[in-house]
Amino acid sequence: FPMTKYNLRAIKADNHWTHDLLSSSQTPLTTMTSFTLTHTTCLDLSKSPHPISTGIGFLDHMVDQLNSHAQIGVSVTVGKDDVDDASAAAIGGDEVNRYAEEDQGVIMAQVGAAIGAELKKIVYSGGSSSNTTGVRSSRFCCPLDEALVECILTTANSSSQQQQQGKLTTFTLPPYGKYPSNKGRSKIGTMKTQYVETFFASLASTSGVNISLHKIRGDNGHHVVESAFKAFSRALRNLIDGTDTTSNYCSVGSCSCNSNAAAAAAFEEMWGVKSESYTSSLELCREGKLERSTKETLILVHVWLNGLAKGQEEECVVVDTGIKTMDEFVSILAKEACMSVEVKCKGDLYVDDHHTSEDVSIALGQVLNTALGTKAGLNRMWCAVGAYGDAEVEVTMDLSNRPCITHNLSLSCNPNDEEYAGDLSVEMLDHVLESLVMNNKATVHIVEKKVGKSVLETALATAMAYGRALRMCAAVDPRRAGKTASSKGTLSV
Image 1 (cartoon, rainbow, N blue to C red):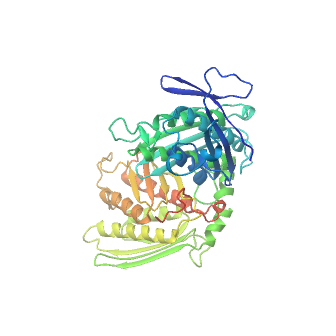
Image 2: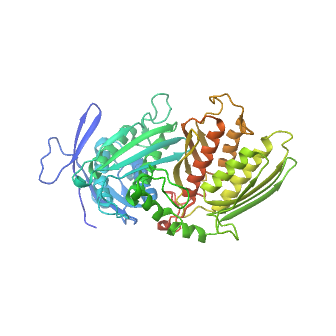
Image 3: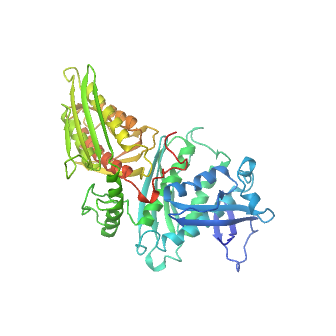
């Protein structure tokens, strides 16, 4: 790999950095920074042989999210002219944070700009998609247990892509957490949070991609930043693949509901029922079964992922819990998840709906977790919208093995002061969602985008969105070759 060095003009005004990459023929208007970057690479669907070594430990960890979630082999080493590269790239001890006390604004601007310049070659030169003309966009939300950040990426017009500079159009991440109140964290590890915006502004500028980062919710500063980098990485992968995730896709087969025909075709090619992903998912023969009996309920739950009910050419859904709302909720979820299910329950409904709805949700979550196995090689994360009646709900899911659910559904303060969603008590709908998510061992954020005329509409829109998200999270990504989509390398610990 050739050694490429980037220098940066950095001008500070009102605590914000503006920055431009300088060619060797340009003369800087201000004093040139003493930092140089070497081994800066971004390799599509490949690994770089070089490390990520910026001299700021937490920044290294965040840039590494591109490796795990964008499937881009990233490397970059920050050094100084008077320090050899081997010493600069050393890992361990103080070397990881060797520049923590230096001017981080310059370092993060320079790293962002250099990575952006490399990413531009992939975004506008093909990547894994042949669709590199016209304006493309991609949206992704990344769920962590204490944060949810939305990233929207938009490319330049086809007539000026190579010359176009991108912009950081939206940035609402601060404050970074709520400790202390209304201020958040000023540093995470040794990285100063005020320069996260600098990093993304620089990356946007040189990549030619407009970036919007919006914090939907977030109490933990570490997770807010991590969610932002992961959301960006996932949105970038989809942008390169040509799958426009800002549109809502049908769960199976035809995508006629999507107005963007090119994106719909790319989505079907990547994830549809005739794709390598779907075939690979079928080959796993994933299923789970549970029978349990207590004094309160007698339950059978059997799940085949990807519609693999034996003897059935298509997915088969049989649900009988004695509660019509539960039957409809589970049925919609299963059909949108493209899975076959058999759920039967005889419960003490003469007492209340509590035991039946809770136990069915617990059992279904446990069986799904069993069927998903180690989750190695899976897509793992997705966000999807479901609409039912006037209700519109988005579910963002991560098969993280770190169960957590956060939602803002209008349940306790629903417009009509309803006590029941159909024949299921509203308080149990909240409990159903919690029991399902916790036993499925997923991290789930639910955002109510439009309030339904009734809680029942909200419930069924949630089931639809949950199923769609689950289908995509459970899909095999053949490009991962059975590897876990995680910078840790595992989800088991």
